[in-house]
Amino acid sequence: MNQIIREGKTKKIMMADMPEHVIIESKDDITAGDGAKRDVISGKGELANLTTSNVFRFLKACGLPVVAFIKEIDETRFLAERCKMIPLELVVRREAHGSFLHRHPHLQEGDFFPALLFECFAKTNDKIWRKNRSIPMDDPFLDLSDDSVKFYRPHWTDAQKKESEQTGFKGFLVGQKPFLLIPRQDFFPVIGSTEEDFIKMKRIAKQTFLILEKAWQLLGRRLVDFKVECGVNMHGELRLADVIDNDSWRVIDDEKHISKQLYRDGADINEVTAKYRLVAELTGKFGLPRQQIILWRASESDDLTDFKDAFRTYNTRGSDFETCKMRTVTYSLHKEPVLACEAIGKLVQEVPDSVVIVYCGRNNGAGPTLSAQCTVPVITVPATWREFPEDVWSSLRTPSETPVMTVFDPKNAILAALQILAMQNPELYASLRIKQEERFLNFVRI
Image (tube, rainbow, N blue to C red):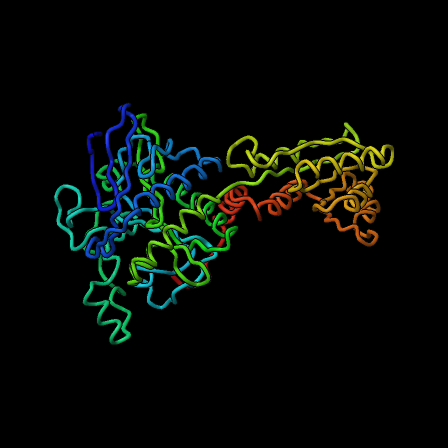
């Protein structure tokens, strides 16, 4: 039997054959309210392990290289890199739910955030912070917005929750003062991390959320928030560690929770078990499509550098997307019309999930012509529009049943193609959306 390194409420971490690895075993326990509510659900460990393994394999497939998961071992265990965990719980929110409403009672449950909200909580046990400092409650909310890290109560006490239900009063945490302040320069050394690591963890958490957000959307459900943890492996590399299972997030199906929130809300254990089984099955369907951008030109002299540079700009992998390739094709619709029509047919037949970008000089009618020959989106970029603006009309005023988008800027053409493909591709969606998140603003006052 493998030696237990650490055991928590819902999992065990055990020694593996190699010192840089650990075995993580999921238990059948389910808890809520910092362990105040606890049950044992037969088979939950298997469902949790299956869900986590499905999720981590999918994240790796999406080009997230920082996942500590290595492989599934059996029904309840998986192998992972051994990490020194950073005692922070990272929460990303797309909607207002849970304790967030305790801290922002002016919002309604389900209020939508165009820009993802990131929150951070300290991971503690027995109401003890580092260096044996007592605190009022475990897992306090952290405000890292200025030079002092402030510790706050994250949610109401049981007595306050009961009073809120009876009176409707929802302002217990409004205006509360922090119960602990730590200078920012002292905080990160205490938790064994750095300011730079924190910035990386924040981006990892958001990128992970975006990948899973799109994956759930494609299955007709909504991921509204989740929590993750990070650690540092034995080589000093930051990793997304611990687990991501049905205890880690809130997922909504037809306005009803199918994750741990069901248990928190007092649902029957049989119903909770059924939803956990459903989530394990659904995460097994997470996947990536096979896609391509067909970059079409009429002549070898048509320079495609701007398009290729733009493609790399939007790719978080730094090279080629694993699931979306760019393919260059050279045919003149004027000189080789039969071969060109045959070529587009074969290309789309091989990879039906395609977008065509046409970059031609004097042949600005190539885009509409190709559009008439296939059922995939076609974007035309007139190469000579500055010198011969009158040529653009052959791409703008097209015959019936020849839908084509005309874009002057190669970078915007690539972006448009990627956005079309991202509708079915979580990797592309996350790569594009994380850049947008940096400039988006929330309409509600937080």
